[in-house]
Amino acid sequence: MNVSFAPARPAGAYALAIPVWSEDLLADRLAGVAEPGRTLAARAAEAQRFERELGAVAELFVQDGDTARRLLLVGLGANRDEQGLYERVGGTLAGRLLISGETRLVIDLSGLGLSGEAAARIGFGAAARSWRYDIYRTKLGRKQKPTLEDIVVVGAEDGAETAWQARSALLDGISFTRELVTEPANILYPESFVERARKRLEPLGVEIEVLDEKKMAELGFGALLGVGQGSVKPPRLLVMRWNGGGAAKPVVFIGKGITFDTGGISIKPAAGMEAMKWDMGGAGAVTGAMVALAGRKAKANIVGICALAENMPDGNAQRPGDVVTSLSGQTIEVINTDAEGRLVLADAMTWAQREYKPETLVDLATLTGAMIIALGHEYGGMFSNDDGLAARLDAAGRAVGDKLWRMPLGEPYDKLIESQIADMKNVGPREGGSITAAVFLQRFVENGVKWAHLDIAGMAWSEKAGHLYDKGATGFGVALLDRFVADNFEG
Image (tube, rainbow, N blue to C red; front, side, top):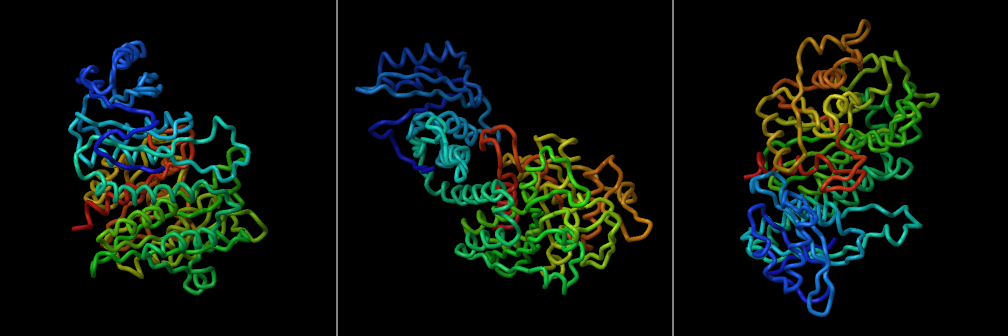
């Protein structure tokens, strides 16, 4: 999607959108529309019960010179401080017109006194909502093909182009995450994930390091390797380093990267198993965040790590009851091979802390179905050993729309994963399943490290469209991490 900014409406053919605040008079906002189109638009808005609430749209065609122009009135609502307001307006319009036959949309902000930042946010929302991944569709119907190619935002104050630069980098990161999450597992597996990330990130100045299965075996990655031993696709540890902050200690982000999850020997039901191609949503988010941060030249040191494996049930697969020794030296009784994400994260967390001595470590994972039961698809779950870190992540999430809800930790939950024959087992009882997964991970956090675990199982993929994404991969977590870094680690 091409997004541009201009002082006034261009000539030629395009659809025209006019945003309206709740208190605005339609006659004022429609001043640039010639009669009888202005009267027709006002009547059409009333007939469609357009009350200017945020995201509401009234649509009609009006005569504009010698052409009939599609005109959309879009509501801005009444609360000018609402988070995500302008992104939602842009996303609503793009979603409405994406396959409409229109190729160009002009969004006219004239008379609203909006900043260039607001204009950039509208453009971002429109571009984000327009993302599609149709490369495997060979027979897409004419009315299913996207037609919208250009979005021009006009009439805002100066600064839109500058504000767009950072948002363009964020859009690149979100788009890359969606691409990774959408790809099928026969295309995206640990080795190909690494190569796709390398191709995308090295040109941006990100340093790439990869640990293969032999190197991990030498080091003692028993938990991660145990997950991947049933697959012909060998596991990988992908390390991405962005050095933009001088000598400061890096912030470390770790993503669960199970490129396909059958459940292993504890196999999942067949119905819906195809969705487990996105069980690498945490790794996808971390990789996309690295694209965004490097793309805008973030003034911070960031390390992104993806623990990549495929969980399959062949004759060499890990069995329920096996005991593995993690990189930390702690032993784990594997009660359920479908609780594999915490195993790969445990070794990745230990390695990251040994290598980089971070003060702050955040992991993202599509970890538990129990998280979806608890929070649905409205919030990602957040667990943390530090109140300040939790508050900063929560603030970043609210600012960009990647909402988090903090969940509890504590000794009573920790006792539920005690094993009779090892240091711990990898699952507790059914009750509190997301919490016992989190306290399992907490056992691998070293003293003094501020840590947060984000369980995004309900957020990486959506079965319905939102105002910034269509049905499918959402890109959740990329904007969150980007904003978290910007607010807390850049001067």
